[in-house]
Image (cartoon, rainbow, N blue to C red):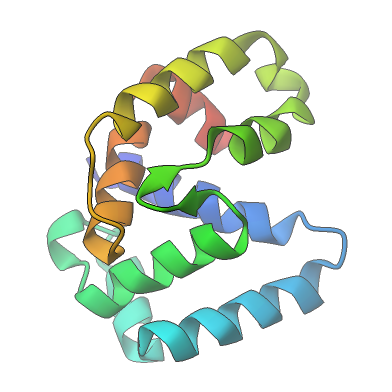
Length: 140
């Protein structure tokens, strides 16, 4: 479970790292999300240091991840945004033959009908990460 969660969180955060203006974009998103979520550096550090376990995710940590997903247009209105995620993964050679599986996994997770809140976004990340396609996408 620990490795799974590490992959989930790093994968969504990694999206920010591969943007054209890598450092500038990351700093901008991190600053926006830190301010919005009211997460402290100590909370994030503790969460990562403890292996990113769901039970250790405080509300501000969950809100920080939700914000990062929203900044990358991967989450909106209580759903994973299939088009944006697939567009990002299309550029990954290792994912080209798995996009249908990713779309199906996203659709299945979106059927959970979570609230458009931090806990809901975090639950969708967990759901997607439990699927084979999600696991592949996180390491792509």
